[in-house]
Each structure stands twice: as C-alpha cells, then as structure tokens.
Image 1: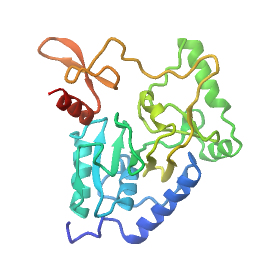
Image 2: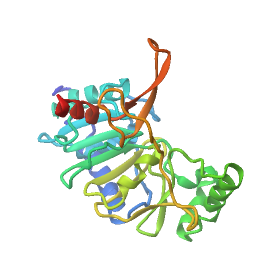
Image 3: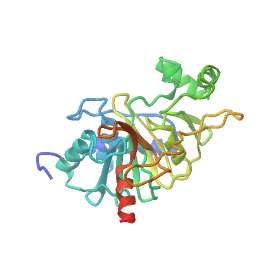
Image 4: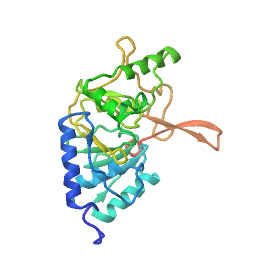
Length: 279
C-alpha cells in the first residue's frame, strides 16, 4: 500500500457517508439516493461512482475483480485495478468465483454470483426517465407518484414503428413492484440476472451523485406488455470461437485472416474457465 494515501484513498468520513447512502439504497430497492460525490484522480464520467462505492466497501481481506464490457484486460479495468491496488494492497483476481467484490462496466458475469459477493456497477445516467423527461424535478415527481406512462408510451411507439422493442441496453425494469430503475448500460441479455439474485447489486453514478441498489432475492421485472413479453438478445446458431459456448453473451468480431465475422464470449473469465475444463 502507498503510505501517502489513506487506506482506499478516500478519507474515513467520506467512506462512512457513502456507506450510509448505500444502506439506504439497500433498504429501498431501485430508489436513487443522493450522495456527496468526491473528487478522484479520474474525470467524472469514467466510473467514479462505482469506484467510490468500491473504495468505501473494500477491506484488507477482500479479493477484487474489475471488468469492462466483460473483459478483465481492458484499459478501464486494468487502470482501476492498478489505482485501487496502489492505495489498498488488496489481492486482485480474474476468477469470478474467487472475488468478494466485483466492479463492472456494461456487463454482469455469466457465472451466478453468491451471497458473499457484491457487484458494483458503474452508471453514467442513473435516471431511467431521462430519455422521456429532461427535468430532474419532474422525474422525481413521476417516481413519487409512480407515473411511468411516458416510458410505456416510448416502448409502445417502438413496437408500432419497428414491430419490436428496440432498446438494446439500459432496458428499464421495476424493483419490487415500485421503483423503475436503470440497470446501467448492461445489454438486456443480462437483465434476468438481476431477478432473485443471491448477491448484492450496487449502482454508483459519480457525475449524477446517485447510488441505488438491488438487494439479494429482490423481484426485478423488465418493463413489458402482457401480449409482448420481454425478450433478450438471441445468439441462436452462433457459438464462441474459443470455447464453443452457445448460451453466453457473444461479441461480434471481424477476423482479419478469413475476412469473416466470428463470435467470442464477452466474459473473458468464463471463456477461459470453459476452455480449461475441456482441456
């Protein structure tokens, strides 16, 4: 640990304040709790909300995993791991099952998480109603009155125009039948993983100064009409070129050698473990 920093960089008062906000968020699933977002050596909009949650929760005995778009080796993931390592000295891992604290951007791991794990998601825009209403005071009133008609209208217009709901990520969902929430820019392939999960999900938006949560065993339902059920992405007929998986979220990649499109698991840890089992 770098002795020039307090453990986990933030001062103890800041960490306590962020933990209190997180506890309130856990008590009211889906509700956006305001918090005093701190300054970090990273520009807001680069995951500072998630980083502040991670720094406030992490302890010497934790094992940290950081992923970006499912990858352990992206610039964002490596940089965050390096920063947290400098001011905590905690052990890091690429093994999803081994980690106690996982910070992620845009994906939820393929392996189901347990009740000893916390998944922290980086969120750029926490307000699910922002696409239909720009004014913060109005969206707060809409949440208070449970008035989500404009969002239903947007989904209906998508159905009329394209014959299907075209929202590919940040698909809105409702926690415990009350608050509509933005699950962060995860693909809607990952939305079902939020429902009834064993782990705690925490969402941090540093620029917008909001924290919200999905506690374990919470009912989380994607917005959908009775006669047009929610559908996640289908990869039918496609498989990962490395491990052969047909039931994971696949990235489309252009193979320069063959000049063809190929598919590969977005979750690099899952893909590596699947190949290890085969070999």
